[in-house]
Length: 553
Image 1: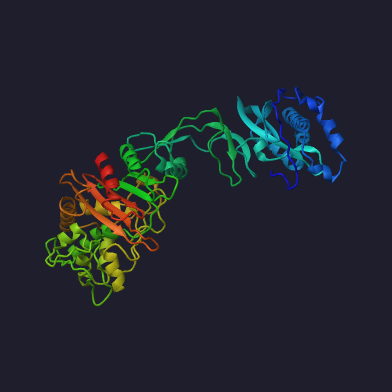
Image 2: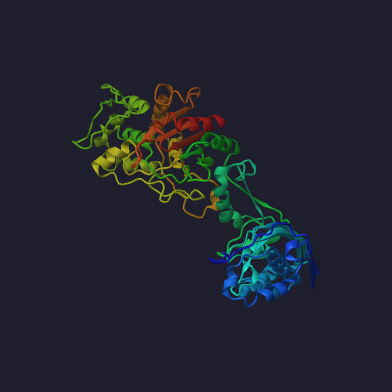
């Protein structure tokens, strides 16, 4: 409890050299070596009597060392003896303290305590508690440290400043201590090969591991719950056990993650700001890695909701292929092109100009105008209809929270919105998870909604889509391979073999001077995508992150 304004708190200059010896029914305490200038030890009751009736002006007087020592001694002795009413009366909030002390004993099944004073604090005392717990024929002693401070109450008497943290430093207002059997067996979250995953080893997974345990722990069979002492928060939630009386036998939740790829992903984003990467198995949609930086910041791997830039040209290219074009179809690359006198578009590289360009060349070099020039071939619904084949017109349930409403594919019936979306701008809102899935669908031809756990555990609908024709998928692999061999991804993807492909991107974001860098690629049966905020070109910012993950795969 905070000290009231105007109330002075004293400081003990030395260390108490006392012990409160406790039995189940009583206690005796001796405090020695009090400051000699105060005239030796004085019982706390005498101190209180001397202070009583001095008036409000004494409430502002600094506390002496003797007053602090006596108040602490009396309180700890009363607490250890089990006299909660007396202990509460020695605080500045008697009713609240008495109730909390009683709850401490009953809720945590503590039948006795032994308290050892320690070093002085500012206006109080550290002390060590050895609490004896008896619960369901189990007995155990729980030892931990706490502290108190002494202030003056409204009458001017020295009193312990009451706070739940006196009972245990982890307690806040409304919290209680509880000794009980856990609701469910201890849970270990593992990768697909049964490697245990922890937030300490994989910082980006901290939130996800906790969420998976909360969602699926009770659905798993096997194991026995542990018995321990916990803090029950004011909202009814509980954390990790503070003291274990009996260990349970754990149960494991197996995820789709791959510890090797997760390690590579964590390393690849480390030290970057606003970076996120996700990797998938192209054959199943299984999520293999999720990492973002900083790890205590926004989850840009799953929660990003921004325009994906030219990485979305994979979808646009598929739509143009479905309209009858081929990789060899003419697609002139002219700066400042538009459609039907609509919005004028520029290319990211001003010198990018090729009158006899093909669709494949435009894709590899990421020519914006080469794509929007063919907007009329798509009509008002062609792009959205193709996006549906990638699963982009449905909300996904991957087994852990993602950005709300993701993926998001807006209406393309407005001409300028259509041409903006064709190059990954406009109202599109995607994440690295979504764009990794786009690359996976492009190379395999099949859409598999990403999942982080077995689908039998996910009770929400799993998105399904038709996927791509063999012709369209083959053409996309050809164009994504060209981006690696001769296009904008050639430098960062150097060394990857013929079973790889990529697409670079940079996305303009309102309020930012620099574009977000995007990159998505596949190699073998692994697809990955990354974003780096305010980073410029995707091939130099997000590209190295994706390449590092793919090499680990």
